[in-house]
Image (tube, rainbow, N blue to C red):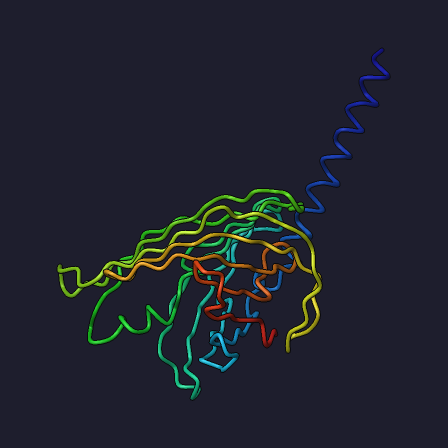
Length: 235
């Protein structure tokens, strides 16, 4: 009896060790969890015309193999390659569970429009989680973010963005200028408000290693393409 219990205990320990090791490898294997990593995305309108680029550079990391945090700087440039805006957001991975600030999924062009003339931005948002071992049919959590554009103590405009009904619907191989990637395909609904302007629609995103966006498409409530962006360079 004691021998059986010892064997069971050893088997459990070995299983947990393998699981933690696998999760740690997943954390370390994701490109943006390494200091100095750079991911470049190019934005296009509904006709496929380039509108600008956003570069995500990991400027610092902390923690160990099982619990890593990264600070990522996003720099926005227009179609003439002129820098218009930059901000920072946080990514974390704990035993394979990834969390990204909702700011990562906000329309940076809108922030660029309101980040001038000594205006300040007050940001209050959730994090989106990407569990280890995501598979088709899984539902993912919702996310909300509110950004207030302030002049001194006065709020000039409030912008909100929320995503919901996120679901993994399959796996697809996607090719972009940055390479070819086997991805999880995720659909979702969104609603954004910019002052009095209210926009509702749907989106499709393809994730490499469960958390790296390779391509993202946005559609209006009539199902017509609004625009898209895709990974065009990675370092």
